[in-house]
Image (cartoon, rainbow, N blue to C red; front, side, top):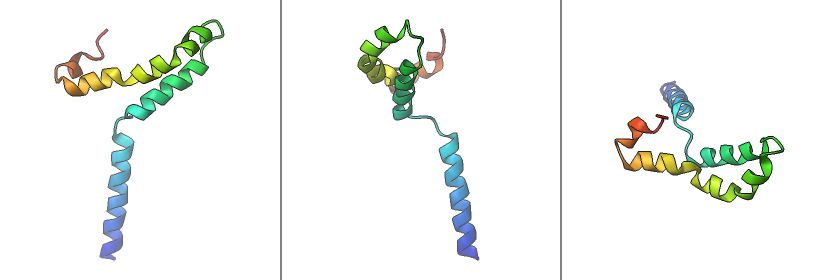
Amino acid sequence: MLYSSKRFLFVVLFTCVLLLSSWGFLVHKTVNQLAIYELPVGMKPFFYNNREYLVYNAVRPDIRRNKDRLEAESILLI
């Protein structure tokens, strides 16, 4: 009984951590790549030709935010 309740608690906490954690670098790259394929026809050629650059640099704001503590406060300011 005690073992199963600890196991259940572990599974619940692990699931919460997964659901509440940030996306991560792989998801940012994947979302950017998939967004290129959903663009209107007139915009697709430009973005499709530059997709490697766009996907590679999709995580640069997150990398910069992780390196500089002050950047985290201003990363979303436009």
